View (cartoon, rainbow, N blue to C red):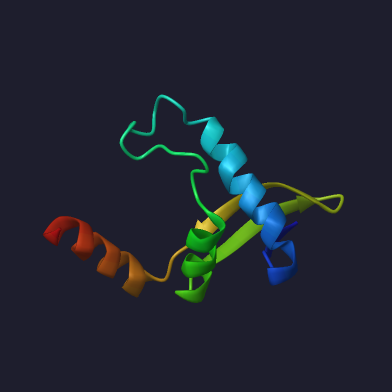
Length: 84
């Protein structure tokens, strides 16, 4: 079942994000790759800014997750990257 990740699953979400980043070693540019890939504070900030995380739950476990960014934030982030 796909469902929205809740605050009580913060630690699991943090682990999933950073474990998944391991699969992209060598693909994520070296200047953007660090450990952990996303800190707990970065994750908290993303959540405060309205980013939703959804996960696929199977037998009470979350083997995967996806990030949903409101379009307004996506446009803002793109603008910030383009304009430096």
